[in-house]
Image (cartoon, rainbow, N blue to C red; front, side, top):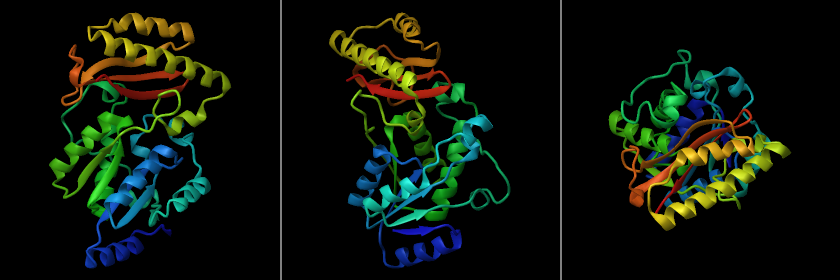
Length: 277
């Protein structure tokens, strides 16, 4: 696996790949690689001749500096995991490579606003789409792969591709889940023993709720369920909503919808979504 830090060096490789007409698959990460990321790499390898992974902790998608500074950094382990899959290239840009004119957030997407994470993390998705747009412009992959754990994010990136006229296929991949049924997340590695116990209790409650929804196929009073979470020391909930997959509108029709959650275990934010059909 090649490890590239300089953008001009990367561009030389990209020119060679384009000249040889090799297809390029791109997997963007912020590091702390887990099996969810690796599943994206594997999917990219099946679809493309050459796979590029990136590690870049993007400052513009964080709402506070403390969260940015405390984001898990596990570079040596990340490299070993990527090497174990024979990923072709790892691109490690500096902040100045991605933001040569200083940190900026371009608000290019108007859909899916003021709901879910956009409501509670203002500017977050502008930071995401800004950095993704930059990577797309540098690498110009044929295909780029994203996990459905961040379902709203995938919606934004699909809109970005349309608006910016990128000739790139956005491939949405199923979440890889742990044995509790929760999507793998880099932030979960920060849970201590007591917090992990709360997380396990949360997973059990959500699992039971999903079964009830699927069996009854009738409107569920989520407010009662949210109140019940305080009994397991979950006292801050950003959202706990059922929304349509296509337009992300709140719905009572579970035939094409998901349960979207964002809540806190102490200061650690847990987000996930679950198909209801």
